[in-house]
Image (tube, rainbow, N blue to C red; front, side, top):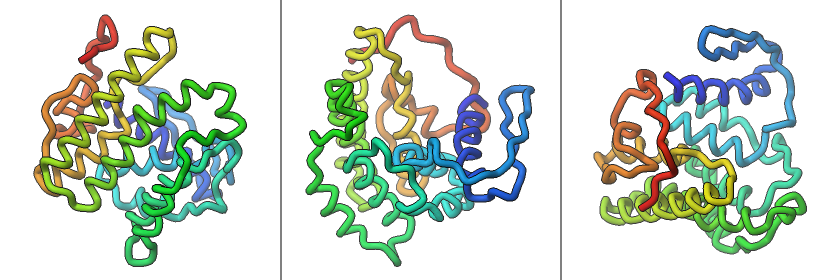
Length: 233
C-alpha cells in the first residue's frame, strides 16, 4: 500500500490545481487531511508533472491521465526549469494525444537540446545535475520512446537495463557522497508496466526495479525490508 499512498498523495497536488472549487483528501496511514482546491504554483512544473503521468501509467488510471493532460506550458511554473525538462514534457504531451500533437516534432526538439545547459538554479550544483541527467534523465527518455514508439522486445530490454545500470551507478556515487537517492527507479515503473501489460515485455529482475513492481497489483504491496546498503552491480 505504500506505493499507492505515495502516488495518490502526489496526484492530489495536481487535482487541487485542476479542481480549485473542490475539497481534496490527503490520506497517509490513518491520518486524513482535507485540503481546499486552489490554483497552485509550487510543484506544478514539468518535472513533477511527468512523474505524476508515469505513476498514472503504472496504475493504469486513464481518468488521472486525462486530468493531467489539461496542463499546458502556460500553467507550469517555469522558474529554474531547464530545456531538457520541457523537452520531456512536450514528448509526453504528444504521446498522450498523438492525434492533435506532433510527436516527431517533439522528438526533434529534444534531439537539439544541449544537455549540458543549466538553469540558474541548477548551476549551483552543476556536477550533481549533469550526473543525474546522464544517468537517470536521458536513459528514461530513451525508455519512454522505446515503449511508445513500438520498438521490439530486445531493443526495449536493452534500453531498460542500460537505464537501470546507469541509475545504479548514480545511486552508488550519491550514496558514497552521503546524498539521498531513491531505493528504486520509481519513474521507470510505469513504463515497464505499460510494456508488460500491453506487449508482454518483461525485463530480468534488477535491484532497482524488481519484477514484482512490474507484475504485481500495486495497490496490495507492502514495503520491502530496508537494505543494509545501496546495491551495486
